[in-house]
Image (tube, rainbow, N blue to C red; front, side, top):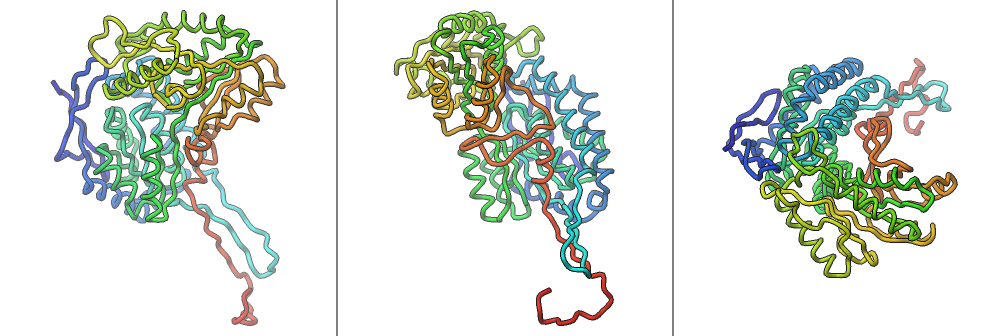
Length: 491
């Protein structure tokens, strides 16, 4: 039975919804909460509130330093409430508690980082060749931002959008995914407690056909910051084009992890496990394509098989659990279909490929490794968003690079080698926005993140992210009291 009810947060108020829906606990397959389904009218109210806050009121007149202090306070509140937020995210998405606790520590760091940068995004003075003129370039907030995040890592993925947008002086309407929105709707309470003026941050959830479509096509929205799938991203590009709005798109991937024969194989195996089985493989940077040098393939696969079969699958709220369920039943059904097709097409099952024994309740799926004869298999080409690793062998560095780049995606990648020159060559040659060498899934608020090709447009993180949420204003000031010599000639 549903026992917990959440509300949308619009214009500084927690709003009762006229329509609600059940949120399902992935570990049991049972509803545990009622979520508000925002309508197009709710979206209009939120965007209009954000627009008012941008143009008038306390936020519009607040100094950059004051904005930064609010962001730092928000980061501190996230840290102080990390336990509750982690439990909610685990409850609503099935992500294991040890992962949500660790990730929420980063969430607080991101808000504090951008709080510190808020008054350091400076304009410039242009020394033009006109003695009676001075020109300054001033950064100003771009406007109302629509931030749209998926169910996986909602708190983290919203922080990389909210942090720089608010530091730049923008106002935000944040749409949480209808799958697992509880942590973001609870996060709204911290926004309210931190003291952000009404309308500055609005947080709601709902379905794409009503809520998402209206938000990303609203004429008052100046930029859409989206994380999700490519089909939705293409629709967002169409929506934003109608209004000449900007967009930042962080999409999916089919990230290669390349293991050479000179690598520390045990360390590499641990990283491969972390890259594909952490978060049950439900990560945009999941290292789902393993490219391993043929001379060590059998030895390396044996290590991986043992590590995969030793993973503790269970209740995501249990700190001892290492892998929890998938987020939805439809996601598990899609993975099962692709795995079945891939095995029928010539893939060799190393381990997994089924629902784990003793897990009749919930949306569990075993850690799965498939050795592929070539790159044509669906499990190699498609982003599964689950704990499925495809394995291909290579003989030369050139072949490894060609295999790594044989994908329309280009989000992340990993390279494992003790050869420094080779590491540099691979890092230069791989077509991806992130290359991790002898590590995987490392993050920092200081470092830009984003993909190539079908993995997205733009970057999140680092100082550059604030620039994405600003527009420049050129201010010309004539310093002479003399009359303009010829008003009909361009100066």
